[in-house]
Each structure stands twice: as C-alpha cells, then as structure tokens.
Image (cartoon, helix red, strand yellow):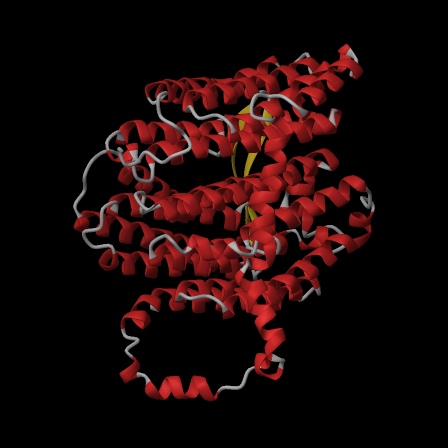
Length: 592
C-alpha cells in the first residue's frame, strides 16, 4: 500500500504533461494531494521500520522478464533510505506549496509541476531501491528532471546552454554508475543487492581485491562525484541556478545534489575496503572544500554564493565519509539539506529587501569581521582571487582542451588522424575480431556527428548508424543475441522513426544556433523528448533492461568492446539532447 503511494507522483506527472490545459487551482489541488499521499506512504514505511526495531527489511514485487532475464523489483527499507525519503517528501511539500504563489501566472506553470512530480517519483525510487539497477533507474529520472528544470525558461539562451552542459556532466558520470551496476552482476550476482551488501564481512569483500573490483569501486565513486558536484565537477551547481528558485532549492540545495552521498552510504561496505577509492573520496572532498570556499568569495550573485557554499559543505561530508563516519555524515546531510533549501527559498526576498539604509548594522558587523584572507599578503590575495575568478582553468580544460582534442581526432571531413586510425584498425585487427573495427568506427562517427554536423537530420542518421554498429558488434560475439536485440529494438525502432521524421521536418535548420521551435511545434517537441528518453536508455521502456543485458554480456566476454559501447551510448544521449535543445529551445536567430 505504501509503495502504491509512490506511484501517485508518476501518475500525476503524466496527467499534467498531457496537452490539456488545467487551471492553477486544479494544479495546486493535484500537487498537494499527491505530495500528501507520498507523505502517507513514507509515514507508513517509517512505522513498519519502527515495528521491526529499526531492522532493515526487503519488499519484493513481481519481477520484470526481458529475454529470459529477470529484473527484480526489490525495495530495501532501512533507516538511511526512509530518513532520506522522509526529508525529500517534506521538503518537496514545502517547495510545491511555495511554488504555487511564486510561479503564479508564469508561462509553463503546468509543465513545471509535471517535472517536479516526476522528480519526486525518481527520488522515491532512488531512496528505497533494493539494488543498483533500480537505484540507477531513479538516478536517471532525477537527472532528466534536473535538465528540464534548469532549462525551464526556454527562451533564455544562457539557461538552456547551462542545462545542456549540466546534462553532459550527468551523462558522463551516469555511465560510471551503469558500468558499476553491470560489473557487479558479472563479479558476483548479489553484489548489487543492498541487503546482501550489508551482510558481507570484511573478509568476503577483500576476496575481490582485483582490477575488476577496483574499477567497480571507482565507477561508483566517479558517478557520485558528478551528482554531488565534487572535484573536478564541482562548478556546475552555480550554472544550474538559472532555473526557478524553488526548483533550485529542492534540487541543488537539498535533495538531488546529496544523491551521490546516498549512493556511497549504500555501498560503503564495498568501497571502504579499497584504499584507492577511499583516498579518492577524501582527496576530492578536500579539493572541493578548499576550491569552493575560494569560489564563494568571488561570486557576484547570491545564488552563486549559496551554490559554492553547498559544494564546500558536501566536500566536508565526503571527507568524513571517507574516514568512516557514516552516521555523522547522514545526520549532517539531512540538516544541511533542510538549511540550504530554506536559504535558497528566501534568497529572492533577501535581495529584494537589501536596502543599504535599512541594513547599516548588518553591514557594520560584516566590515568588522576578521577573516583568514586578511592575514595574507595583498599580492597573494590578488593572485588567489585572479585564479579563482578564472575557475582555476578547470572550465577551460573541460570545454576547450578536451573538446578541441576530440574534434581534432575526427577532423571536419573525417580526415587526418581519424582516417589513419581507421586504416590501422582495418589492417591489423583480424577479420574474426572485426567487431572492434565496427565499434571504433561508430565512436569516431558519433564524435564527428556531435561536433561537425549542422543539420539535425545528419546527426540523427549518425545516431542510427552508431546504434546499428553496437547491435552488429553484439550479434557477432553472441550468436544467441537475436532475442535480446529484438527486445531492445522493440521500443527503440519507433522512437528512432519519430526523431528521424521530426529531424527531416527541420532539416534546413542550422544546429549551431538556437531556433526556439518548441513554442510553435509543441507536440513535435514533446514527441522528440519522449523518443529521446527511450533511445538514451532511460527507465521508460524495456530498452532500459535490454541495454543492461547487452552490456553485461559484453563486459563478461569482451571488456574493451563494452567500453566502446558505453562511450557510444553516452555520445548518443548527448547528441540527441543537443538536437532537442537547439531545435526546440532558445530564441530563433534574428533575420538580417
């Protein structure tokens, strides 16, 4: 009964996403009723946990079967999950109530609440997931909701650009969690079940001290870095604040940004036994704590200061978590989430009331406050501020150095290094292993499509060719893969036809610019978004499970091919998001 309460946000989100126009009063009634139903479900789970003496327990639902592979729906009810979920629903209820008046008469009012409820459903799934695959499903929903809410003001080019950049970071780090979940199945089948993880002894975990075990731990750690904004991904929350203030409060102040910590708390038994993973957590937390404190000093807006204050405190939590203080980190996380949510919600009021004549006493106290920076020399302070304002070169490294190297790899007309690499692959790889050649060519084609194509039609054609290369390579190594490929293509094929037909309609558009067609062609934009979710492997169709099966088989038999496939799937999602953003968001270019 309590689990059914968590389906109410999903159903309400779908209803609000339909092309029917509801009044604000109706939307307010639906959202409040939905959140109260979710709160009832959490309360019921909490009382069940109390009756169990706070002993964790599992809830099993009927499994989903795809290609003779069973996808278990198992929910793990423990104090960490229920506590995080209770905080999520309470803060979600506050933010929803706050948003009713904050977004009054705003264009996209109904769309906003549809995405918020979709996010609540994803967060509920993430909080009580019984294994990593189900956790990843909620993780993906939370990431997509974040992308849609950062770009809520669709005509603002900066908001849309920041949303796409944040989604790219999410996509890169999400591949880490997907790899970890699949690798866990290969190493030992129960590795991704949290009930089994909590029962493993140190000796049982240390039996898997190998390269595969190290990769498994690092995949989980890197995935958490992306979601919780840790070094080197610590600077995206300031960009994500372009969305509405209530969504910033619930996403980057309270809930979504702490999901990476919850992942590490869930898997603490595994990664804590590995020295390199633990050292990476402590090191990244320390770097984030220091750099975020410096970044906070040079921010010129209140949301930017709060964003870097959040990442610095989460960096401190990572240090404590690496030292093994799990209970302290969990309590710290809940209190920090509540405080930051409140802080962001009142930030607009603080700015509106910041009249200097009415705040002389506050300003006098700030001027008398002594800081650590004042004890340093002026030259050192100026140098630190200069490097901080330039983001320590990290943003330039991520978006210029790496991107430029990838672009030079393929060349504008598929020449140069890309042709040389293709010739080497063709000449030296045996014909029996030509699936490496197919996958390598697909990677180069995807990179070329991302950076050099101007037409959305050409980009979609590249996506189709890349996916065909993935399936061909899988068929060459597994002669019994026809059933899995069929289940994968069953939802993918109509989605590909949909995006191909839409891209054909806008084939004359230059993808280097924004066109804002979503305001006119709303139905096409929504169809493209749904198809994009299916093709990207999000948990909205059987392709999500079939993709997991394909990757598990590849990791077990051809690890290098699995890495290439993961890279292709990551690029496919980024390409589709770029087409969606450039076609349906932003402003149309001015006619000259």
